[in-house]
Image (cartoon, rainbow over all chains, first blue to last red; front, side):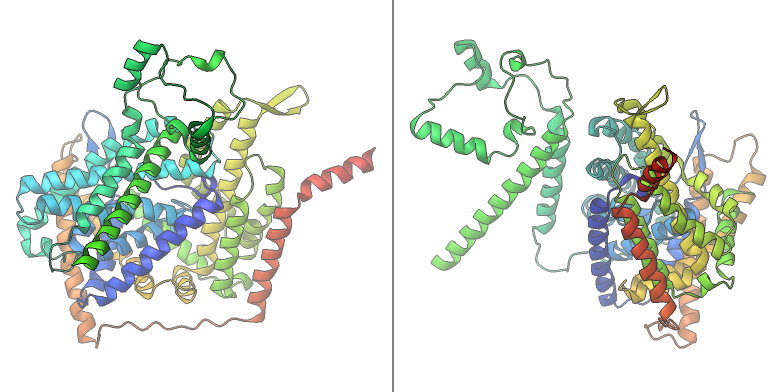
Length: 348
Length: 270
């Protein structure tokens, strides 16, 4: 899953470098606030452990192949998200420098893909929710599987996204996704199983170590920030990926219109307020009908009928539309909520 | 040699190369780091079908390797090992992009093959540059350079600690893997249960070692802050190195010199 420099553009590489650098600086600062100075040697040694563990394989019966660990979730459980992020980032850096496993420009991408989601989102909001408070082997297994699976899939998705945005490889987005995601499903399951096994082992042998990781949010009144972040992640996932699985059949209104008038949509009058607003909407819509703008002039006649759309309709424009729509909606909802809060505070 | 021993040997070999004394080795690591990053950005910024215009950029890795006394065969071997990812993604280009771009005599060359060659060339250039950076600088100096250029201190310390303990833990893991191999028979004992037990024990030993490490540091006066020795000093030749190569990259990125040379030679022949 390490990306090479040859497949990304400077824009993508530079952006991800900036993002990763920002997260690294933030994590380092948070780490300095943490008064536990046992952390530093522990991080170094655990990094070396992950490095060594990545080179130990086990055979998967029946397939003749072998699997190995990535380690993000284990590190998060033992160190907490910030230290785990830095530790994993250091392992990936060493791999890039000494083994050319991932390019130097792509280092930002690789660290972000493999460490960010696992340490900052999967660990607190998936693993801890499932296995944090009441720890049993079953819960550890479930939490580790869920967290590892989702992290690995998100990482693979980000790899495809970054490669596609760079425009150097000819692989279309949909093909690439269909190649990467199933393979990483298997990788994620393996990762989850290994994580669960190792964590259970340590938990049984030295239980105080597993509870060692401090909670990420300050112990204070329950904030709904985790819920919000979870919702955002879900919205992005739904808009980005699930939109492909949306039914391509006409919805209720279009179906009934078609039955009555013979067309899926009504044509409004071109003149007056209708026409003016329609042309305004046409100009403003940057993703009309959840797809990229078709170049004008439209070929009349032949292109009218619906080419039987395949399902799932893997469409990067749709993903983009879905994600953008979700983001804009969230921003609007946030703005309205904020405005209402201010209004209520003003009144009271 | 097992894979762990192999990896440790590789790291050790690269480090040994960096201990040599050549003019390149004596340059300030910041100059080399920045020049390499500039090189990678320049190479990666070439458009999809650039091939001839990339060739002058071979000069940088070749110069570093020869002046820095790094064996080219070693570089080639490491590049081959790292090649699969780029290769298997790039190989789709000829399959997907069939538009003819050029004719070589009777052969029509599709755009896909040109972009594939471009990807592999970019790969070779960027990977060799990254490996050469470590081979002529050494890991400690690279970390120092990055820290001086703005990387957070905690991360620099983490890298140095990690590096130091890779060898220790690598040896430990190698011994455990060898023991497992000696006690397994016909595939039994190499499965998941033994593996997870192995990892679990390795992890416990790691945590114990970290504990002993911390106590050792405390008994030597560790007070929570680690101070780095910083013997880096910029000199004139570092500036010359960096500015010279940056100028070269910019010039050859903006002007397609091989193309121009080809035209001149054709004119001469006519």
